Length: 311
Ligand code: ATP
Image 1: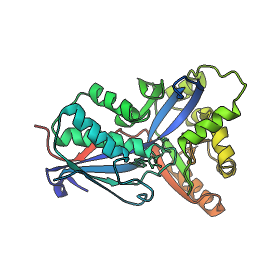
Image 2 (image 1 turned 180 degrees about the vertical axis):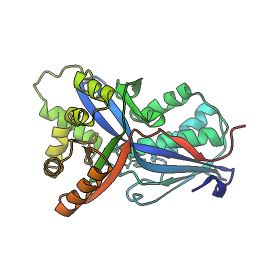
Image 3 (image 1 turned 120 degrees about the vertical axis):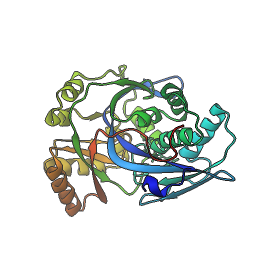
Image 4 (image 1 turned 60 degrees about the vertical axis):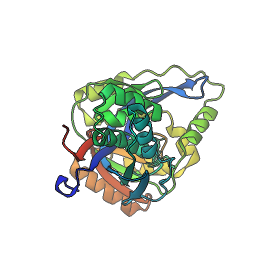
């Protein structure tokens, strides 16, 4: 969609998916959450969220991955818009249209991405001009990953993942994502992780020197070796075929592979565009994966691609 085709009564925001380059999970907290130490990385798989003035609140989902996305008030984009309206004292209903290309329940934070996009789009359409800090605060109330999807790039996350800090990261990285048909529920994966670690002392998570060094140097091979996800054993336990997919990707020459977030998407890091194409073809031909997507990172966070000019 270009700016020429969008009426000024709409705003369209493009938002990336994420992969966790490192996801370290601490012991379960009293509130049931876990302290995390994670490195988020935004990749070039995008959803687009368009908000338009309307007589009443509404939401539609279209695009290649629309199936399974709720269209009622439980949609995270709708919740984000309502929360922002309350925070900004706005009483102007909007229609939300989500063009979905990020896999649903895939561990790539598609719902959180749409929430971040809705915040940026509505802020713009309603002319609220909230500060980045104000939007981040609302984002953190919506979900642990939402502040990162506002920011994009590569960043450290702590707390439940919502406390962001910059990380020195060089280079552009090439990714192949192996997608699975079924989704994995994030709470179920955390519960399985707790079960697998029962009776074991779990340390508070801190970033690893191997990951920080790899990112600082921009060395894709070192980054491939440093990819880590504490949830991976639990995801594989719940979906054993993920182990086979990881093995296949490494056999076909990936520099590293890791389950993305709680899965079931598996992310493979490769050397360059050509290697990405080769791996995508090999994985598809092997029959081990249902669908593959190529992408690069880091990508920009939620950003306006069409809409009224700021006054
Ligand atoms: P997580 O952020 O926990 O890693 P995920 O990437 O695995 O999540 P999502 O695609 O964000 O999974 O969807 C998780 C659930 O959230 C879905 O099952 C769906 O019912 C619900 N949901 C709410 N809003 C959205 C949305 N805009 N897009 C996708 N799913 C949504």
